[in-house]
Image (tube, rainbow over all chains, first blue to last red; front, top):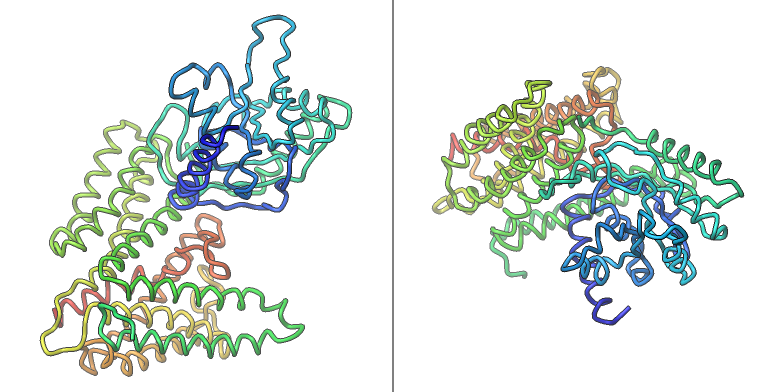
Length: 216
Length: 313
């Protein structure tokens, strides 16, 4: 990554995001010590808001910043213009296509390459932000990725609050405290369906651990 | 001597508070000595947090008048955020919550501007009516009364009640009197917090009969009475240093702070019990959230302010 990009990323994550996340919002983190302190690793979280990846990035020490890469949909973020530049240079996404354009296209190749560079990926297995504060269906992409990189730890993280603070389709940020519950790292053990079932069970357990104010 | 806008007796009182903390740390260090440390972890954390809170509060007050008002605006924002994160809210009211937050900078701007009439009516009249109108115009009637009540009460306590502490700072200087707004503020905050600690300590020493078991099972009649009496006595001693209060008024103010502090404390306890949570947050180790620490001030602040306003300003 170019130097200017790194400086922009430092300003963005180190100052702007931290100010918003720690002051305007506010965090209640459980088991921060379970987060990885080196790459490669996959942080797999539920998805409610554009701020999800930013919040997760602030939980890791700033020195890891050059290695932190949110995995994001190419069809949404790389439509050209300012958004593409911002997503690539400042947020530092690894773009992933959600649909194949050719039948033999390997959609996971760029993500796998990032793991081989020992980067820490922020991954949203739901693939979309969905309805606010509802756990959607987890797509099997996570298991496919874990299968290819069985030595890379996958850390399940359950988040609550950003679906209220900045949900899909709204641009007004409303302050709320966020809950971030980190689970134990897991590794691929030979079966995709079993891996996804295990991940789902861990996410449900993390969610059951909290008590959340009703929002409906 | 540091150059500060507050009169010397305020700075000297802060020095006294630091002395008090040294004594408290020594006592807690003795209670939690050796192998007893594990059992008293929360007590130790609580005293440590007191040091930080006193440092932050003293810095905010001593620096400048505007700085002190901004400090209370931030405190109000944090308390409101804890409250709104705790209570049930409706998805339909997301934008309304944004307006509720906007009352914080406005209300504290009136304080800074010394616009007393607006300070008094902005939240109880304008904000309350505006929020209700905004909510009804969404057209969502499900849980309407509950939702509107929750937001009104949040603004009235976390913003309006708390802003009275900041308004103490801008009360006019009394001619020929060393008392100032900063002195009044320190008087009510110090006595309210000491009253909390004293009720806790008297309860630990003598507590037998529960006073309000359904709300706060650990609070006792002995703790309440001991705390209120000690607070009243302290008010009598400290009032000549920080306030223009006459001796009988000082006793009355002490009594009101003692009882008001208790009611504020158990009111927030009742709210948390209703919602099924123990603490309102995790910001202050050993205490909980901001709301857990300022609960008693939500009542003592406005009561003391209007007592002073009626008799002296």
